[in-house]
Image 1 (tube, helix red, strand yellow):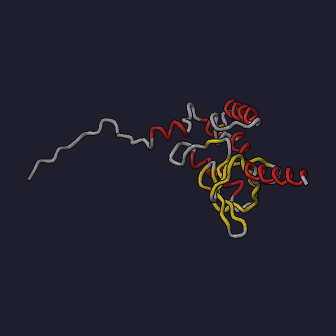
Image 2 (cartoon, one colour; image 1 turned 60 degrees about the vertical axis):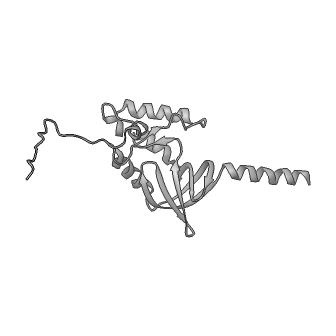
Image 3 (cartoon, helix red, strand yellow; image 1 turned 135 degrees about the vertical axis):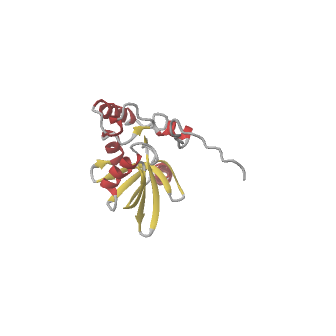
Length: 172
């Protein structure tokens, strides 16, 4: 009886921290977030441990399009890392044997989130990022790509045309 109680307790504890969800990708928001649909229920998944360029940033649309080229309308499995909230989770996404989070890093479509990526495999992901940088893949083709966390600090930039002449209008 005690063994059964411990088993049930273990199942409850594990299910709160690790949750697998299979579904068809119905939306790709950007380079690090998608929506899955299964049995009429939607789940927004943020790809754990990576940070892709914002859509208004250089390489942002390319990152989203790269992700979509793999997963859009495909059946994937998302495994949570951490808590699952109302219709949202953060985790790894698998398409068959392919880890999509890793593909984004390997192809230079996202940075490893150095502050948020705390699992053992994150060190391997950092090495993958360094390899993408060394071969100038994706966002690493730019001389100094701006990480999204820096871009977000400044907000969208307003560019002013150089040598713009201001014209004063005389009152009537």
